Length: 81
Image (tube, rainbow, N blue to C red):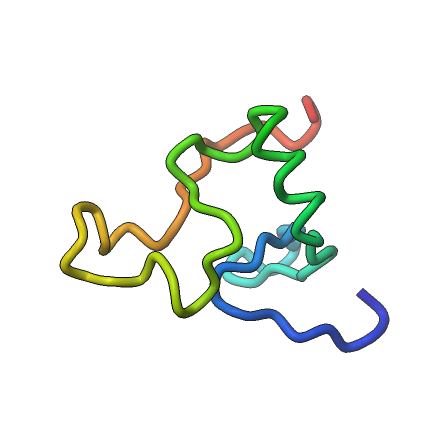
């Protein structure tokens, strides 16, 4: 990303892992809401992910599974992608 774009809780972003720094990644793209809906429709995002809720929605700890505010990805060989 060459220009500054605000990233908020609940935004869907694409990150690129660094080859030379294992503990850092770069934000490559922030998906727009319509793009995020397409990603979910294509099965690229988990079915239990709730879109368009931001900070105000979906963050209530009393709800079932409220503490799962992350997505865990399986390790894949980057050369196969």
